[in-house]
Length: 292
Image 1 (tube, rainbow, N blue to C red):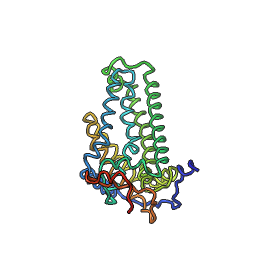
Image 2: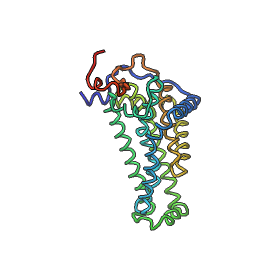
Image 3: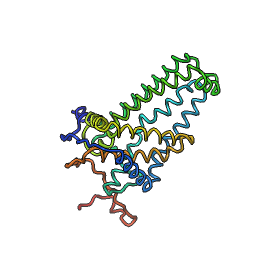
Image 4: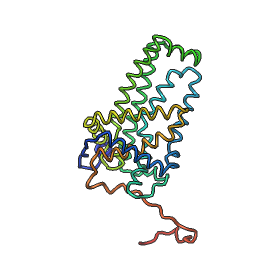
């Protein structure tokens, strides 16, 4: 029974997918920027580890043995980005509903009835990420063998100035593109949907696929926007991602709102408990339950 809930949830209604246009993307981005402006400290708190982790990984790889995987790992962050931004979806959801959107509420997802489904989809994205790394390493080995580059300078020379390096760039970019399309298709709106409704992982995944199938050009443009912004944010030692990632995270919530028709009967199980502010004057009465 528990496994069935993770897959299909408790909602009997099938999410209705809308047709969207490029203007919906721009308006979603505008709403995402507005959310970031209203909750900047929260977004940075959630996402500062994102660029720091990238810098740390690059530092470790300067030992050269893992250097060929430096770019695939950094690029692969986009594959698991929808999972990393789930706290941002929650903050946008709360702000939209007029609820308190302080940073601590980002962890309210832990009380969602869809938590099992969220974990299941997160594991799927992680599996895709690891598979991408395995394929990237295989492409490198096919072109340069198993020997690690002797130095960063030699590695750059081999990749940028040899036929094998050009082949690596072309094939690696093509395969990476396919992985990006796969990740976008299954996670474009699946995590926001799980936060909004108790629908289960399978329903969320299929709904995300339906959104992409119904809006191939628009969602393709969305994928391009995400890729370009991530590249721009990565250029200054990944520091720009502290702005780019939260803006994209908030924008994804609003894109979900435009791509899927709101549920007429949203589930009532997921209501974040509001924290009651107390003062010192409440002590010791606050230690005991009261009747309302």
